[in-house]
Image (cartoon, rainbow, N blue to C red; front, side, top):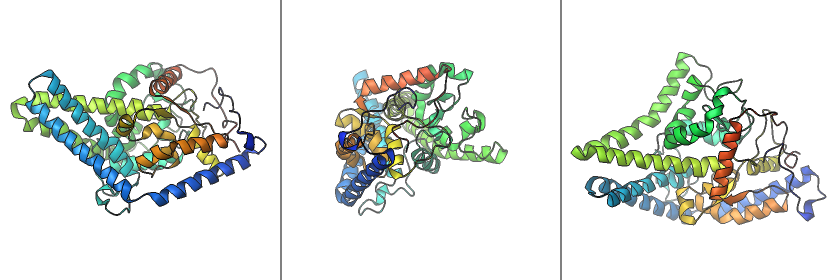
Amino acid sequence: MSPTTSPQPAAAPHVATLSDDERLERFGHAIDALRARVKAEIGEEDVRYIQRVQTVSRVAEVVGRTLLVVSFDPLTYTFGVVSLFVHKQLEAAEIGHTVLHGAFDGLEGADAFQSKGYRWKIPIDEDSWRRGHNARHHGGTNVAGRDPDIHFGNVRLTEETPHHWYHRGQLATSVFVIWPFFAFHMGAHFAGLIDAYVGNGREDELDFLRDRSPASVRDAWRRALRGWGPYYLREWIFWPAVAGPLAPKVLLGNVLSDVMRDDVYSAVTIFCGHVGEETASYPEGTTPKGRGHWYAMQVEASNDFDVSFPVSVLCGALDRQIEHHLFPRFPTQRLRQIAPEVKQICEQHGVEYRSASWPRTLMSALKKIRRLGRPLPTEPAGLPERAAA
């Protein structure tokens, strides 16, 4: 929630007389109890589920790649592109993102889904992603100076990134430049290339690099190419080459499926889950005053959005972004199952839980990006009152 423009929600009756310290401490205990219960249940059922998803992904890939070659009419060609998109989207979100968080580490029968050594079918270096996403982003969501995702190149996503002249066109930059090849841009971001050549718009400038020395820049390029190289060689060179004289239509299909994946993955999940007019952000130096306070910060810096189950699968359950930020190592099915209980716990302890329709959430994110493209008369300071202990 915006620290300066949004009122504190009414507390549940039975916590109205509690201090913030007591309220948030009880909130933390309730979330911890839920975590312990669900963690004890994770096992064979979750492994079977992800195996089924991977089977669907592989079938979609075979169908998609085949139709890109043998189709002779727009309808079957389009079906091939969509089928290949489904494969790429499942590999990016429902499978890969969940695996790299360690959701299946140590589970019997889940040898193919262990985070260590897993190769993500997306143009992002896995080590760089774990460093920037799992550790930095999840460790301090929307906290300036800790979360590298409060800005993205020349796009500021919270008030905590200072305004510069180049932010004025950031809505168009986001929708028409970054989103169509979002995975490529994320690969550059987490590898450190944006640090090397653009900076983060803040006084410290760098999120991932120690400095802009030749050695640091070379390391950033090495990380970026480790993600880009195998992916684009396979998708944009190998598969078209296999098609021989039909290479142009195969290349087009691969590019279109990439754009579909990146637009959906960016606009529907990442931006909707983290950006909005009521989404909390925190100034540099903010530290939680206890475990319950940290949970409340995670909840209020995230947004859920309501979609059907098939769309949720394509989003990798990141339509349940609040649950994911509370329990980043839970399999996707568990996030969907516990969402009503998490909402109830938040309401009982006076922590704002946001969930709206997909279009409404997306419009809120776009409005925030557009508003942040203009210089603001004042910048917010301090924690939201309800989250401060």
